[in-house]
Length: 339
Image 1: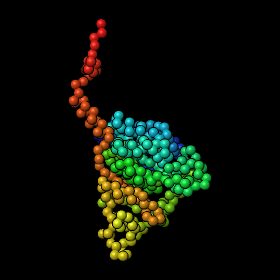
Image 2: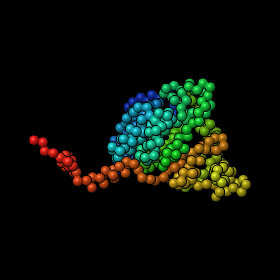
Image 3: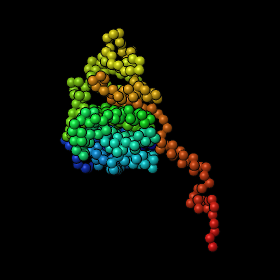
Image 4: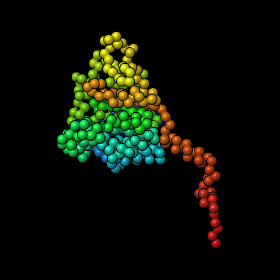
C-alpha cells in the first residue's frame, strides 16, 4: 500500500452520526482507540475502508469519517477480502463480534486468515450476543447462564487466538477495552502488518454480560492477572514485576523471581516472529487463575500476502498474453466470417 504521509487528528476520523451504543459499553473505548490509531498511521481518510457484519460492533462504519460498508451477518470477512483484492491501495478494517465472526461467519473467518489477505480484523469479544439480546455465543464460558442456556451452556467455547493460529494465522494480538493506550498501540502494529491481522478485544457488554472481564480489569488485581507481551522483552508481570513465565518440558509455568534460584535470566523472552506456533498457542490459551491472560502482539510472522500475489499473477499473465485489447480477444481462437 502506497502511504501518503500527512498530518491528521483523531477527531477528523469521527463522523457526524450519534453513537448509539449503551452508556458504559466497551465499544466506545475501542472506537476512540481506532480514531487514535488511524491518526498515528497518517494515511488519508479516503484510503481507509471499514467493513462490518451484523451486531453491536458492526455499527462501527457509521461512526467513522472514512469509506464504510455495513454488510450482512457473518459476511464481513468475505466483503473485506473482496474490497482489498479489488483495490489493494486501501487500508481495510473489518469490524466484527464473537457471534458474527465465529458462528455464522466462521467459515469466512478461517479462510480469510488462511489466505493471508491484507486486512485488519478487529474481533470484539464480549462472550455474548448483545444486539439480539443475550443469547450465548461461540466464546461464552461453559456453564454460562443466558437467554438460550437457562441451565448453563454445555458447549466448549472457541479460543479466538487458538482458532486463528490453527487456520495458519500469521498475526494475532489481544487487547482489552479498558486500556486505550495499549489498544491503540496494537491497532497501529496490526495495520502495518502485511497480511491478515486478527486482534481480539475483550469488550464489556454492560447489559447482557456485565463485568465478564472484571477479574482482569479490576485496578487492584489487573497487574497480577494480565501480562503485556512485547517482542524481544522478558515475559514478566505482577505489581512488583517479580513474576514471569518459564518453560518446563512442554508446559509453561509461572515462576517468582528470587525464589528457587529463579532470576530474570531464566524468564522467557517473547518472540512474536517465531514461525513455529508452539509457544504462541500456549500463550493465547493462558487463563486465570493458573496463568495471567496475555495481551499485546502475540504472533507476527511474515509470509506471502494473498492480494499481492493476485496482483503479481495478473501482471504475469498480461505480460505473456497475446491478447492486449478487446479486438485481440474477439479475433483469437477459432473465428468465422458470417455472410
